Amino acid sequence: MNPVMKFLHKTGSPAYFYWLSGRMIPWLWVIFAVLTTWGMYQAFFVAPTDYQQGESYRIIYIHVPAAWMSMMIYLMMAIFGAIGLIWRIRIAEILAISSAPIGAAFALIALISGAVWGKPTWGAYWVWDARLTSQLVLFFLYLGVMGLHSAIDEPRKAARAAALLALVGVVNLPIIHYSVEWWNTLHQGTTIKFTGGSKMPNSMLFPLLLMAASTKFYYGAALLTRARNRLLEQDRRRGWVAKSIREQRL
Amino acid sequence: MSAFISLLKRDLLLAVRSRAEALQPIFFLLVVVSLFPLGLGPGPALLAKVAVGVIWIAALLASTLSLDKLFHADFEDGSLEQFLTSGHSLSSLALAKIIAHWLSTGLPIVLLSPLLAIWLNLPHEALPVLVKSLLLGTPIFSLIGAIGAALTVGLRQGGQLLALLIFPLLIPVLILATGAVSAATHNLESTAYLLWMAAYAVLMLTLAPFACAASLRISLS
Amino acid sequence: MTPTRKKRLTMVLLILLGVGVAAAIAMTALQENLLYFLSPSEVAEQKMPAGKQFRLGGLVKDGSVNRATDSLKIRFLVTDGLKEVEINYDDILPDLFREGQGIIAIGSLDNNGVFQADEVLAKHDEEYMAPEVADALEKAGHPRGNKASTDSVPSEYKP
Image (cartoon, rainbow over all chains, first blue to last red; front, top):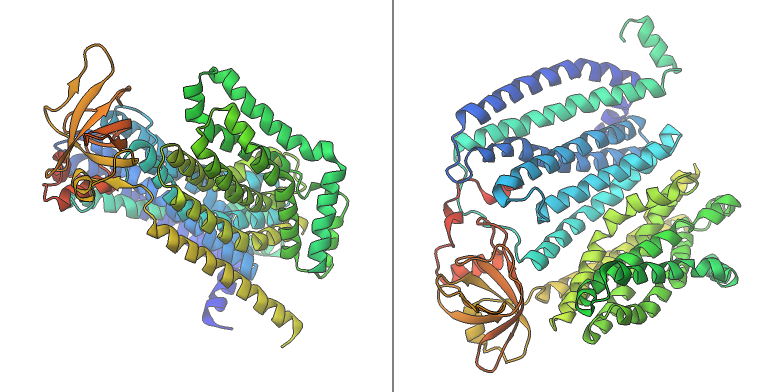
């Protein structure tokens, strides 16, 4: 057995995963809290006011990390899904479906914060801008995965179907993204804006990077918490749960 | 290969024999399109402007309506289980069903589109592009829709869920097709859009049968 | 070769063939210009025939907008810093149409070299500009448009 498969099988054992994730979760929450506090402080008190957009630009510290996360989590969901489907590892299936609500929440945050930011910048809460539209489609894709999962009663089957749908979605995502950009170019005469026109000063960029890092730890913590609960619920009658309780590891 | 042909024949025969059912999506399409002039007013200029979008969205809805039933009957009477255990390649059987679906739903939509274009006052010069875009786009509806149909087969609220699953995936088709037709109404070149649609159709033709077979395996497990 | 292996091999070959054909078509599509977008300089260079439809993009020249008082008719110049094209338009303009704004017009030249627009699209705020417009402006040696170039938030971070 090659090292990769060994790793997958070891972490794929429910008892080991439950124990390991239990150890990791508190640390992930602590790092998340520290990074978020630091990032928010930097974002609201240290970063300078933008001379053109005023204070309203500070929404990027929520909006941009959320948008990044919503895309990254969809990819993670598809990767977990593929691992689950190919090697039939149940933990990967659980991780895939547990990612969906977190990703959907980030997509929703990105949409709402985008709308709030749009008001001062564009003068309207919603503009059918390429980026916002792509984000909306991504949100719909998450809803599809979650809807399919909840429609199937048998948990294993539900997780596998949702994983497959996530994979189909990930193949189509670039195509959707580019087509939305064309559509936008076509209808509004606009598309990607100036690139490389000017750099963001470091004092503005630093809090953004902090927030981008902190959201990753949030994802890790929330994902493992959800996956643990789902695993425990599915395995409540299995031997390892009883054994863990006896050994007071739960 | 022979299994592929006989399944295709069987599905087409079924469509021909149960004409009323097979024609439902087409009537649905006609009714939906006719609602727009009634809702928006009969002004020719406005109708010409929205014509492409209306025809394409109606075609999308009509295809989805019939996709819901794609695997349903075979699931109910156990034929799907038989396909699965028959030893024939499930993806080629899925492809046969997809082709039968396109021939019984997609093709009639393409053939009807000139009538719809006249109703909605679409400029004449855009009609060939509309027909071409439908010829390339409706197979993609059948291909991607079949994956959704395979994932939702046997579920209670299958229809609405199917729409939720496949509509976001069909957005590129909608955008490219309406882009092509509106370019044609402005006398601009529409080849690039149609080529992109062709590329997308070929890609989906390659991948969708496998995804569809994998979905059926999951749904029947 | 065992039958299963043979089957698998055909399957892989079919997938490769399909993906290859799709890629080939996509490559051909890339050769075609999706937008048919020309700057005023390119219009002058290529001597577009009268009546041939295309998209024209550039900035509305300051002080060039000339509105009729009794109708929707409007005349203005579109510039890329080097050349100018006169545009005639007779319909409702987008709300964001202003002098100095980047626009894209769809229409054709008449016999006098005046662009008769069927449709005028405006970019929807100060920071937005079609890349084609930006590229054309840059090619023409124009400093990249208005305030956007000194904008301190990079454009990728806009919602």
